[in-house]
Length: 242
Image (tube, rainbow, N blue to C red; front, side, top):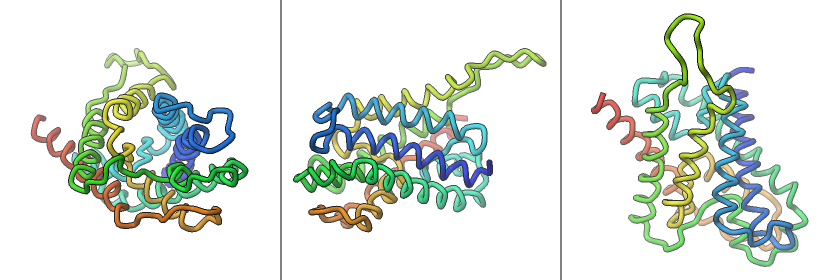
């Protein structure tokens, strides 16, 4: 599996499971209806875990343009590969969100709240204040990327003596995302990933969803630019401390 295909598949699974838990909680007549914020943040964290397990060996499991850019700023990833990764992540996010709609289509049809239907696809601020919303996305992504930059392998240096966790090695990033959601996600819904928000937002505009809300393109740049700025600041700080 090539890195390009890996990032498509991984990001699609990330959004399938992440968007899926939102659909299960907010759409009408689902078994998980009204499950609450704990269910959503836990579902997203586990979505990250599954996606990282699948894609880590093939692409490094970026699954997020902000992560790719942050790693490039830190000198840990070649800049020439960033566009390919970002394209794959966008395609994967669109594929994943479209699959969520197909799976939950009956429940979309039963849901009267247009805002709830849009929430399955993209984020929105709890209180609309562009400066504060931007700051929230910067800080959330800063924590994510700064943590990722300091992850280390569980291994010994001696030849042929390796202590690893196998697939459990993906747990740290899942815990970071879970922590961000629980602690910092209440302001904007913690996109912290340009592809995670923009790709599904485009799909929300394209899909034949009954009685859907406006796509709020005036806000759409916040969960794109904010994470990129946050990731870049994290990388620059890491370089300054190294």
